[in-house]
Length: 69
Image (cartoon, rainbow, N blue to C red; front, side, top):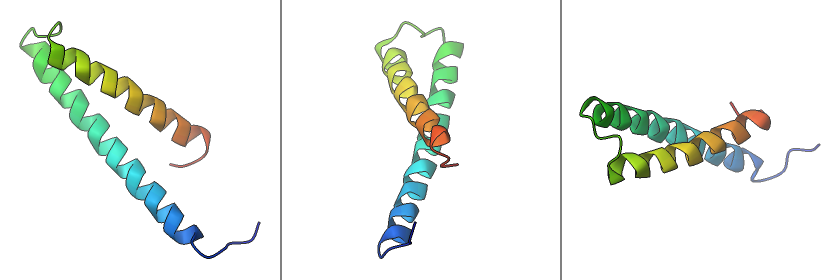
């Protein structure tokens, strides 16, 4: 496969997106731990974070599946 114009920019964009997803995932985990420590696992905020975390976890698995690490 030949490297074409724009390929490096696309790769850079994927890397930035991956880093952002990892940072957001980590932040969500910390927020969830804090809420759990406060006994707020049934709160709307905790449930929203859980949904977002699952979405981000799926994205990270797709990156791994396609070798974007």
